[in-house]
Amino acid sequence: MENILRNIWRERSKYEGQGIPSTIVMPSDPDALVERLELLLASKVASNTGVRNELASICDELLRQKMMNKKQYKNLMINI
Image (cartoon, rainbow, N blue to C red; front, side, top):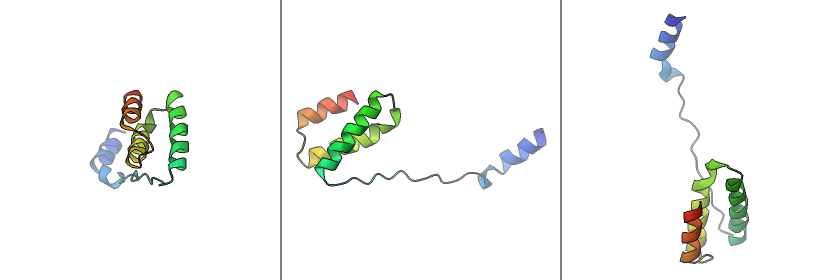
């Protein structure tokens, strides 16, 4: 058993992959962004910890489109 594991460990590069690139496609429609923001905020409240990056990206885009002011942006960033 030890020899089998040793061989697998030595040749692990054969078994390692590149993974899936995590690219987020951001819609430009502010209504779609707000809907997604609400969904992700609810998911965060339900203890889903994997949504912070997307939440921040949506907030950045809403700020850029002037659909959110800097004070709202800052409050959301503090709370996510």
